[in-house]
Amino acid sequence: MAFIQDSEAIRDRVARITGVMLPWAVRVAEGEGLRVTLTGEEACVVAEDANALARGYFLLSRALREGRRKMDTVQRRHIASCGVMLDMSRGSVMKVEAVKRYIDQLAALGLNLLMLYTEDTYEVPEYPYFGHLRGRYTQAELREIDSYAASMGVELVPCIQTLAHLAQFLQWKESHALQDNPDILLANDEAVYRLIEAAIRAMRNAVRTNRIHIGMDEADGVGLGRYYHKHGPTDRFLLLNRHLARVTDICRQVGFEPIMWSDMFFHLGSKTHDYYDLEAEVPQHVIDALPPVSLCYWDYYHDDESFYDRMLSAHERMTPDTVFAGGIWTWSGFLPQVKRTEATMLPALRACAKHGTQMVLATMWGDDGAETNQFLASGLLPIFSEAAWQGADYPFSEVEGACACLTGLPYDVLRAYGEFYPSAKDQRTGKGLIWCDILYPLMTWGDDSADAAIDRARRALNVLSAYDDRLECRYAALLMRVAEGKALLVRDLRSRYLAKDAAYLRQAAENDIPRLLALYEELQRCHRTLWERDMKRFGWEVLSLRYGAVMNRLRDAADELLRYLDGQLRCVEALEEEPLPAQRNGQHFRALVTPTE
Image 1 (cartoon, rainbow, N blue to C red):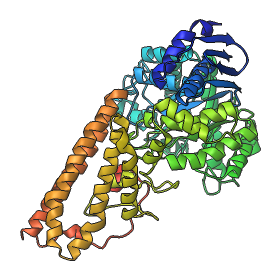
Image 2: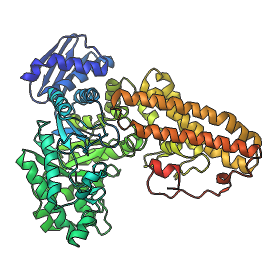
Image 3: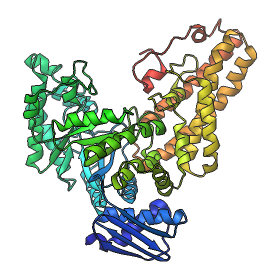
Image 4: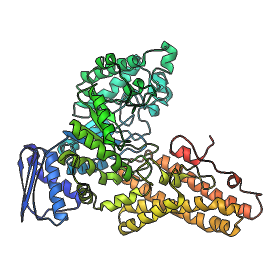
């Protein structure tokens, strides 16, 4: 009954999130699931725990916001543990107060799980270089977050790495002896297990849950680096299972039940080394040798429910406790990829419902510098919360209504953010335009075009202009204005140069590029304000360096054009070069700015 005693504090936290002050006294009682009733001036919430109670207050807030004065809503959890994994390892580490605000958002929706993905961004006292200059959480900070989460009925689950994705720590000379290769730990090495035990014990001292995610994904080079030189070729299935057994033993010793990403088993069982190869065969002896660990199937890519269905069935052959990790796409650059999130997650959640999956995560990765603030995607959280409480066949209007109440912005604003991208494909036109060189844009256009990107930016600006008082919308509008200006230059500069249109070139150098530079300056300031509101300062330097680089290159391009027009240069060499399709791996910053090391 403790949550009943805390009901006023929970009510206040939901009100701070929604901005809606309930005008009624609300009677609160304990009971199975969630029931919310409103008749005239009388309201009642019957809830099974603090998290359900927070959702009850949220549903009342929605009713008031939408002008409804009567309701009798009965809901239950269709997914026992449903929530979010926030990436705190790709540059941005949320301030403690921002994590608390995020927890309040989760709780308001009735989401009861939060993972903080920390590769090296948490304190391990025995290893001072672990998270050095990366904004790592102290154990005191993690304990504070854990206590706050518990008060809102949210389970804080550590999400660490115990094999791969540790390049940030392994870069230091002190840790070179722990490497198999620069990203992967050396399996079967006692010094490595001392590190892993220290890391797991550090988390044990910080959180109350009995669950921990131990990572182990994308360790494609395991056994092929220093391990190979020390021990020669080995059965990599056996190597992976031996390492997993050691890690799970450490977890059990300190009272953790481990979860791991499942992809390495499928990679090794696929003839094409493809996680999503439906013909992959994991040998039965490998399955039989698995220690007690829950496998987490991660998939953010497919729009076909039957594909998720078949992959979940393949996982169920290996473990009775499959965890599903989908994705709210925050890793495509600057703004959430709304179209792709909708296209992939709605069928994924339907498949999870069919299989009765009882632990579901929305991962929010920050690949390539954490350019996208996770709060920008909060309006997409109801895709998961409504599946958790109403079942996967809920009407999409429920997402739209929950988004408006949670964020204070209509779902049309999220759709405007989504105009940064051409379609539900993973095509990062917006990011490409922000970072690319105007003289030789290394853009992967696909079926997109500069004209289409300009049209999308203008459509988005028509929506966003009404919300200029909101920092997030002002930031998004600046991105659209920069993308529009850059697309115009990318579209026209070379053709006008080849046509010897000196008037256009002078206009570009003396007016268009300086105007674009002013927009970049404003965008950088706005982005920094957004970052500093929510994130520790560590990691901002990456984006600061990128903004500085792109702006200085624009100044240099303008100068080159003017020197050409004034006869100091015979030609603009980059514009003389016939552009070829970019055909580069990835759509990250490094691939967009130059082909030269």
